[in-house]
Length: 328
Image (cartoon, rainbow, N blue to C red; front, top):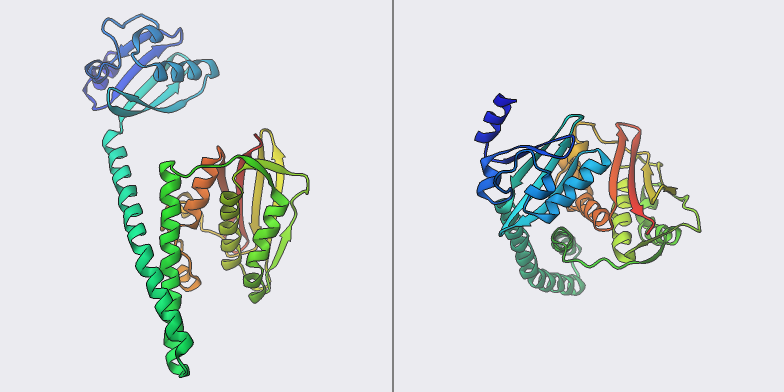
């Protein structure tokens, strides 16, 4: 134990050791200097020694539930992440200062949001000019070039829109409405929008959602979530394949599934597919269109509803994306 304490005293993060009775065994200088921990802490209950109520509450949950816990908190104008690792004899609590990381993330989001806003107007003007030129042009060879230009401008417009949506979701600025959402009707509307795209490749769209199934959520956001998932399922499907949407109750959640018969995702790529601009096959993605932000938007919409998303996939067989949404 003495070697462990000596090591933890030298690291650049905070460490707190608590025994199974809830008494503090050790706290390093990091915690003392930042006044997260009071002096003369040894042998005292953690709730008497820790100077932050959020930390006390988080540790209380870790002890009562007997499982690891993660939480974020502010203390004296700094931001921290706490990781509590519970063991049979000892609970190890690590404190990481994430202030600079959060500042960087905020600066990045603000930059992306500002640039996206600035780009919206010139893109709209450019699109309008190209549409006017296309309508007035009689020569087919020039119309072909104008069509290509319009397609690229539309790609830019979609990228800017997706960036704005994602930035708002990441920052928490996007308000989530809570209303009854009829999941079968939601699927029907998404299918109506994407049916022409599916027919081009002879892909069947199957709605297997029960008519009585509802969740509390934001219709527009959930529509965007499902549209992105079904759109991907069509794009990366095989000719004559199918896309099926299912839903079922699972404890306090509704599990919404989008299953396809497509090319699948190599397992080494699965941990990264929800990151912005991540592409499994960049050349194929460019040919099929898309901004590379769809799955990242899906993840953040699920999180903003208090849910989560999981994926199962097998190359050459297809993928199943499962979104878990709280019933209440």
